[in-house]
Image 1 (cartoon, each protein chain N blue to C red):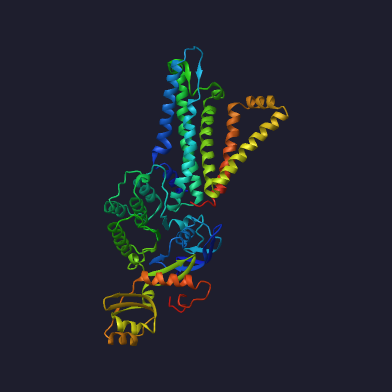
Image 2 (image 1 turned 120 degrees about the vertical axis):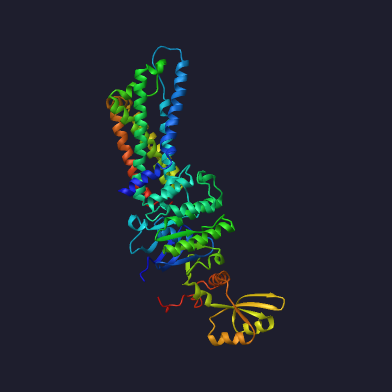
Length: 228
Length: 308
């Protein structure tokens, strides 16, 4: 157990990577969004997707956690299991921090009527529908999702190379297109969107957590035999 | 003495290359081993498999009597920094040492600090901006200061200048004397490490072609120096590995152990016996192994009745 905690500390040893850079990206995205909102002359509330910027950074984090920190952890005589569990715990910490920042941002937006310009980055009504806890969980799940996608992709690359990664990427894309085709053919888009609305943000978040768990299992199984 | 590493029939097959070919060896505690061989001979692959960083195609590896794969109990007593070691994004040497301090129970910060000063390593510069030599220094410092019971050094001197290499060799011997442990040093600069290593393992094209005490290897050949005519006459009955002349003086290295009587005879003729260069000997043995591959070469097979 203590060695897994040490891997968490190993991942956080350069605080810049997991803590400061995502916060800086978030701050910058927020500043730019507010500036743009201030320039839009409408009275209705303005919503934007600037808040997603740091989430993409989690994708890069997942990637480099594997391509660079995994080989280093091997030199530190860490087992693959310890590395995996410690890295996921570190990512969860980073995602929690992100979720906290989003919640605080949301409350500030609430209190200041959207930074005084009626513009919102964090307080997207649909996400906050089920309360702050559900909104926080949604942000957490999004950050984890991006991290795990990057991590899993990099693991597959490490284990089998570029060709296999492309095949898996294109394959997953084809499966999604195939599903979309099926839904179109069966004329079920109406039901599909109804389902999404019925699930709401919280329902979707819970499904996202299932997908994250599946990706984690896949990446762990692939990592078991990966060579640094 | 019980071996700390036991390898039997280890084979590693890459898609188009047999990297290790039925390798068997045992490593005893408290010795410095030289793992010598050409580039691509299989040195790094062997060390990676011993530390469970890589996987064998067949055969077995036991480290401290256990399978090392996913075995924290074993791995925490072992340190292997690769020649092409990767470090976390944006990490500095300071970060790397702080991490090593977490994972290696015998880590000596004092030794690490001293080595940093001696190698003049900029600890706050990002590792990806370091020169090749400074990058090697990071690995060397981790390897030495970790004081792991089994430490592997994988071509640790790449990019290090002569002064830095000497610092490494000196500190290695010094710290080894203070904290005896098992050290496996892979190298192709054979003469530079010849005085450090107590036992030589030569690997060529995935096969172990030599596994002997360094002194015993040296005794396998002699160098006779003296008047060229006399030296050549003496060498006529021997297998010559190497011949050099300077004016009327010749130096001939021949294969084969000399008995006391033969030594006396050489000296009686006014010829001198000089120490053999381990490098020359190993180069020749490697070439011979390549030449006689497939046949059972008696010359190279380590003597089986050697006393353990």
